[in-house]
Length: 374
Ligand SMILES: Cc1cc2nc3c(=O)[nH]c(=O)nc-3n(C[C@H](O)[C@H](O)[C@H](O)COP(=O)(O)OP(=O)(O)OC[C@H]3O[C@@H](n4cnc5c(N)ncnc54)[C@H](O)[C@@H]3O)c2cc1C
Image 1 (cartoon, protein in one colour):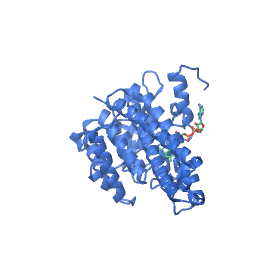
Image 2 (cartoon, protein in one colour; image 1 turned 120 degrees about the horizontal axis):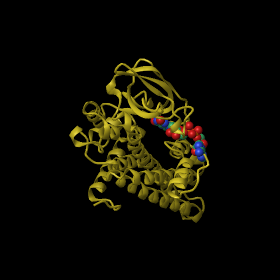
Image 3 (cartoon, rainbow, N blue to C red; image 1 turned 90 degrees about the vertical axis):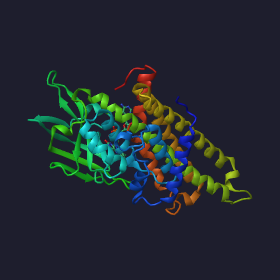
Image 4 (cartoon, rainbow, N blue to C red; image 1 turned 30 degrees about the vertical axis):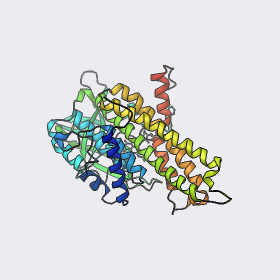
């Protein structure tokens, strides 16, 4: 039975990840250390070296790493999107090649869908794969793709031409980092995370038939199998960051005294922190619902809940960080206290992987049945 009250196993996992994250404060080697303990592949099938859990467990891990100040952005991509899509739709050979390595942390996979002329509107992507004998030739451009330099391959969303209708349909290809014709340029982001973002050019990248993941005719379904985990994991990333900022602010507000009592006794400081806590808890509840629906195989139900969770978590994170910075006064803007850098970082969850407005559009149209403006 699924429940929104955490099981003892989940509580134990949460406690173990928290203890781990507190003991590993350096970003260097964190991925491998977490993978060694089974945290990175906790959602992947046991038959391929994973933990046999789901997005419920994986999102819990990412939330706790973030709450300790050490979020691993690539968890949103490598095990959650790529691992899920390969586990659900990959061939036996793809599963054998990739899943054990993604689970044990020895290999990473990035994910590229965003294009310069098709940001929020992924129906407009133009990266195109055409057949050349049994090979594929992939051509196009991507932008803002995270971690391409540290990933062994990137799962690229392209399109193939439907032989019958001539229309383009989405397809997923595994593109090795050093494939000829596959080049990258680092984007100068105002973010200080370990994971960098890249603009990619694919110039007739030659790929063998086995690079295509899953069925050429089921592209959209397969794509959404990966995008829902991505949204749930982005919610976890945001909730973790919000909790981290809030903890720092609460600790500061308990001590800092400029009149007769600590500043935390003033309701102008205490109430917004309490509100931030409530918003983060509510966002987590929706994230857990989305994860449970997804793990139970309800892709449609999970779609709506994952969107709502990502929205709620993004907003809760931005507000928590803003209030945390404010609580520290001038110290909120020093490097020493480490909160100012989160002002930029917290905005990521409002923009990516799907913006606040596109989720409001989704809920307006899909849930409320209102007409579309675009
Ligand atoms: C740190 C970071 C990491 C990322 N990592 C990856 C990655 O690994 N792989 C990947 O593929 N992509 C990645 N992205 C890209 C991300 O998914 C896109 O930035 C996001 O989808 C928005 O697209 P865009 O930037 O082109 O904005 P646009 O689509 O140009 O939107 C700009 C603004 O217009 C609004 N808007 C657009 N259309 C509408 C509409 N119809 N109604 C109302 N408002 C609208 C949007 O909400 C937004 O506020 C990353 C982005 C960031 C910032």
